[in-house]
Length: 435
Figure 1 (cartoon, rainbow, N blue to C red):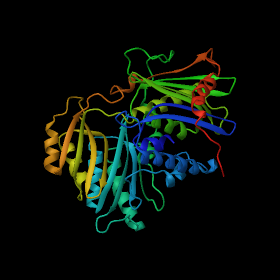
Figure 2: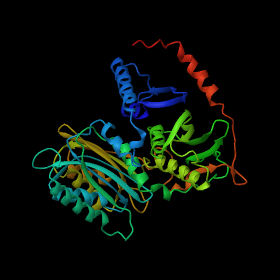
Figure 3: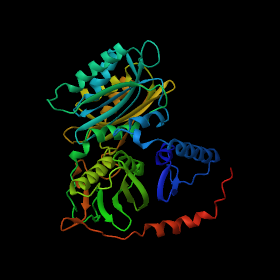
Figure 4: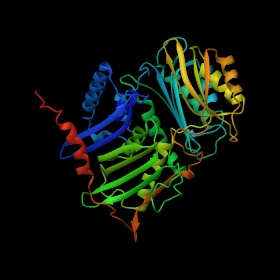
């Protein structure tokens, strides 16, 4: 449900989630991107339809899931991504010029890029690039050609690497359904263990959000009387924050039974009451709780971007991504994040450009891109990331409550009464369901 609301470009400012005894009640307060109330009747009908369709898709046997949630890919939906293309999935060690080299190989192999999204975090990189044959639009169906393209890409990804590097390249066709790109990127980076580079160093034993600290604070405590683990997350508010957090909980097989999400003065506060769906003993050890803390921090930090934001809109043509990334690489710059997609005859997208030496990027790169790519190329100075996180993960903090080696039961379960006090306000609008 969070994914549906996020994909419809709605901002979730507050949410109450409660489920027990086979029933659930979820309340989401949403606005448009400008913070205005949603008044478009067509949009409201679309929200209802999408949420109802999502509920129907939840009827899947949990036993069929893989750790990477591959079985879910067939019905995760992402707007503007064609089902007729071949998807390249890559994860591994990040290095300057990697995306430029990958896109150059695709051009040499006669593959046209229709969309591309790439994230980098803690010196790890993950990208999903949709390609089609240059000669005729459509997926690459010849198994031998697929294997050849994959081999060439693996050579590029593994170049200048060392033995033991975790690098993964996959090419696949989606015959039915569409993969949700950002959902899949979270899965790729989690599988690549990018969270190992996070450092919960400040406030680890207190979990309090210190005034003036812009990091991500995560605390875990035990609610013994109901058998829940309580996860509190305090950080800078930003778009898609709730989506990023619930993604990692799902990937780690935690079920959210109750939750309260709110924001005040640019600070978001998330509280989850969770249990592991398969292991009743999960989080009993210090190492397991520390891993969950690091994974939540990583999920929130992955979307953070620094440096110069460059928005591009130009006519689509073969090799455009290779040309744009090539210009950036030749000028000694890095691309920590990119999203580019084909819409009709045009290509629109956003590049985040940084200098490896952490110095300010010369705005002249915009003119060079405009000359090489044509069309409209604009820049937005974005030296501070939207979440307020620093370039390193040292600003993140967390806490795993302990008392003489045992988990401290810091609170009794009181969220339910709070939830129902809010939910009761909406109950007068409900009517019986008629078959």
